[in-house]
Image 1 (cartoon, rainbow over the protein chains, first blue to last red):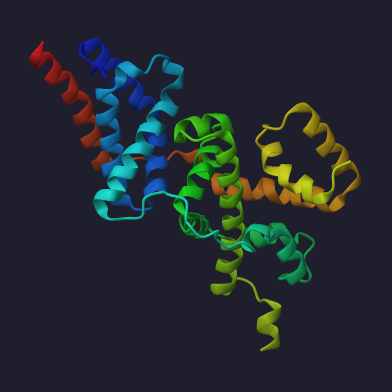
Image 2 (cartoon, rainbow over the protein chains, first blue to last red):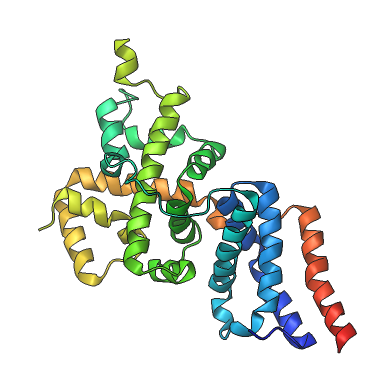
Length: 203
Length: 83
């Protein structure tokens, strides 16, 4: 790896970095779920990017390139912090959760019996902070593909390249992340009393 | 003709414009006959928007931005020093 070794190149890197800073920071915030870790991660990403700028052959790919560096840097950061590194859990998590359908659950539980917009009313219960809390509770390895595709608009192919995993693996993790999100939203709504379930009615 | 289960599995890819032509045609043909899946598609669209919130950009706190600017500008200075 050759480092950036001319002022012109360094200025180019600084320009590229500034173009993507708010998005890169948003990615780091969602990735770490911790403001202080996000601060460290964005700075570490920029330092690594600066050292590896020569690897970026196509400036139009800068965003994905920076996100890939941030993803790798986050693994080292989590290790150093003794936090869970984004690996796939051994046990086949929530086997039934994988089949969970939020849309069906809302229809069956009917939390707003007089509403014409049952499903949209359910989403309206959630403030931005609530959504963030649920999103942050998704297993990191399944949250990452969601962050890249749904939040940042990368294609599945681009997201797979950023994470350095096969497309099939990306699609499978994306699906599991989506299912955890759906179940998480429902559980959050029940736990925080946003909806009344039939179970509670029977108590 | 695909069933609801298959249609649901294609929904997010459809919303992200990532389905190939044939699966899109099959999916849309299913929607024409299935009110339930039309409802879930609309729900999925809103759910994705709720998660996407602001398309991922988060304003950097001023204090951090200053440190980043020093980092980026400092790189120039360091380089000039060694040039």
